[in-house]
Amino acid sequence: MRAHFIAALVVLLASLFLRVSPLEFALLALSILFVLFAELINTAIEAVVDLLSPDFHPLAKTAKDTAAGAVLIAACGAGIMGYLILAKYILPLYGRVLAMFGTQSDLGTVVAILVVIIVVIIIKSRGGKGTPLHGGAASGHAAIAFSIATAVSLNTGNPLISLLSFALAVMVSHSRLLLRIHTLRDVVLGALVGAGITVIVLVAFKNLA
Image 1 (tube, one colour):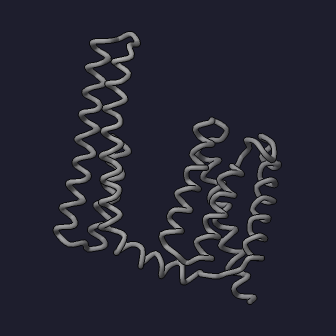
Image 2 (cartoon, helix red, strand yellow):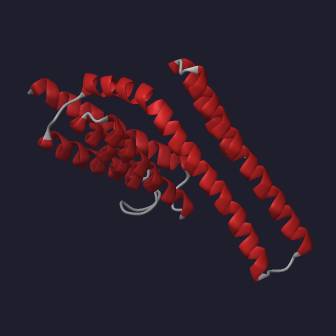
Image 3 (cartoon, one colour):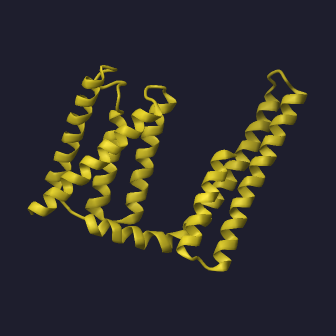
């Protein structure tokens, strides 16, 4: 519920900032309320199942999985609604931001990724934790994933491709948390190193061109 409320707050504030129409705002609000409603029903079902069947039972598992699936479907519907409404406001704005830094450089991309790898290894060695390929003070997977996502964004200048690339980078970074290989601080540091160095290198190559 905490995650849903944070996402709802971000979407509603963004819709007010972007000045969506009243109808669009109403559709977004209804989508958000539907997701919250589904999550509340899911929580209620889980509580009842735990009360009636404290021990493991296949039917109890089916009831919980089905309720969780309902929340997933509601969230997917809200995501589609949010994209259809907000994309026409956000993507052009994001496209103009990319155009400000936009550059196309194959060599710059390769150099940026190599520099990111070297910097991450240096950070790991200075921190004295983990190995160059596992653990350590900065997540190498997060750094490289965000470096590639940043390079894709600046090289293509396409807002949708950029957002999808960063979504994949976030998924890669999240996997390091799920596997308990890195802490949130390590992942955030890796992401900042990867994205920051890539922007600096590609902008430098653009100015030298």
